[in-house]
Length: 125
Image (cartoon, rainbow, N blue to C red; front, side, top):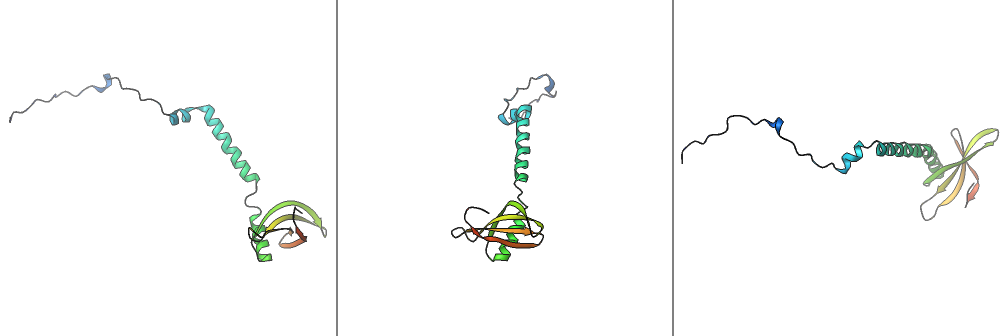
C-alpha cells in the first residue's frame, strides 16, 4: 500500500499528435466572407446617409423656438423657402399641441425671427 508508483518521466511530444479540427460556426463564416462584409458595410453607409439626409438636428431648434413662442409643445418640419419682405425665409409646418388636439400651423423663420404664416392649416402650408 505504501509503495510509490512510477510516473513517466519523459514529457509527451505534442507536435506529433493530430489536433482535431472544430467545426466552423456561422459567425466565423460570416466574419470571413468578403461578400457579406461588403453588403454589411454598404448597408451601414446607406443607413448613415439616410439618417443625415433626414436632417435630425436641423429642425429641433426650430421646434424649441416655436414651442417657446406659442407656449405649447411643437414638432416642426421644413417644407420650403420663399422671399418675404425682400428676405429669404424658410417655411416650417409645425404640429402644435398635444397628441389628441394637434393643429398644423405654418411658421416662417428668418434669422432669429419667427412669424406665423397665415393661420391654421389642416393639410399643409
